[in-house]
Amino acid sequence: MPFIDLSEASLAAGGSPKLGGYLAEPAGAGPFPAVLMIHEAFGLTDSTRRQADRMAAAGYLTLAVDLFADGGPRRCLVSTMRSMASGTGRAFTDLATAQAWLKASGRATGKVGVIGFCMGGGFALLIARTGFDAAAANYGRLPKHPEEELRGACPIVANYGKKDKTLPGAAAKLEAVLDRLGIEHDVKEFPNAGHAFMNDSEEGPRPLRPLFRVMGIKPEPEAAQEAWQRIEEHFAKYLKG
Image 1 (cartoon, rainbow, N blue to C red):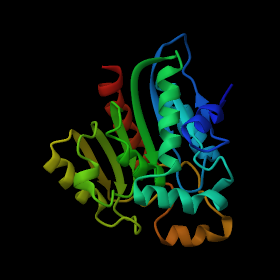
Image 2 (image 1 turned 120 degrees about the vertical axis):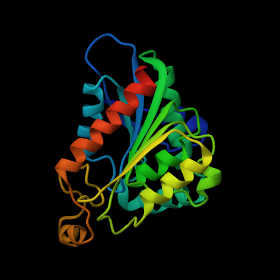
Image 3 (image 1 turned 135 degrees about the vertical axis):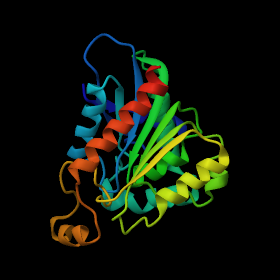
Image 4 (image 1 turned 90 degrees about the horizontal axis):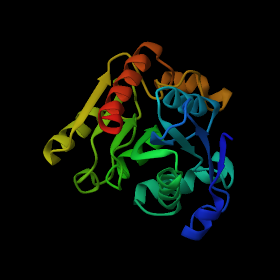
């Protein structure tokens, strides 16, 4: 079944009572390398599910965890963003619960990667040092204290858009930090892309979408195709190799 109920394990760990996620499974018997997927600020949308399906088609047991399971974006967004800003809180408990489920599922090889988009990209950076073998951060906000919070991280691939008005200069800053820390990485800024450029459709409330376009928040298929290729090559190297 595509929906996975993580509530029992989450409650035991002090996490979200209704925690769950969308599971996308590769064809075949397995076991498979696994990927934890973290959604953007609009929640576990159909676009996120298609992204999980894409990872499964590439051979990865992919769990897209729902960080807004207890009330949707309207009730959970602010607290989740506060958790990301502080580096502590229920969101991190939920992510650890999902990571543990993948490792204990009996369907995984033991290799686990993490991938995130927008808000999820920020979380992917923050948990890249917590037992993952590879990370992919897509237009994710940098940690508040990057030298400290990225120390000891797994190999990272990151994709940003130069036209992203929400994260100016983020790609260069991330690359500089990873260089100083000696962490294997591949960071690219796409000149014609903005924020959320890897989505295959526009997301968010319809009345706000014209504003989002002005802010550079929209799909960019050509850049997205290359970004996905970079992610698949990165994960193949560290999760399948």
